[in-house]
Length: 198
Image: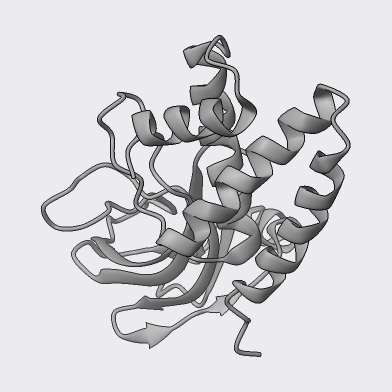
């Protein structure tokens, strides 16, 4: 589904062709991020190379797409093939006060949910360059910026996004069917959520 498809469907469902395109584009991208976060539907596998004395890292989408992944949650992170322990950001802040270098043992995700982009901090700071840092993570979808931009979410998740936008718009327009649609969507989100493995 393209951004244009989203806009056309929402306008049709709302029976209103005058809803501003820019408003819809903003809402579509916001709700896509929200639903992707709630359902944990987009997984990514990525890697980058460690650099000496660098402790903050962002990850490319792939070897052919160097745009950075917007991370929601890291499921697994390995440094040179060894799994690192995930710690809380405040604990990492405390460890950072001791500016130790060596082979990393811990990581934390900074940003992610609360910022447009997230990055990973390692501790201790790597003392050599060239070691592979590998992640398995949940990510946000790429924003749709042109009308021909294609949504990377699965069909079922795209339907949830549409229902959420239409339901919220109905509520803002004082249309009571919006309540039923939002309640239905809560069940759909629950049914399409990828569960954590722990």
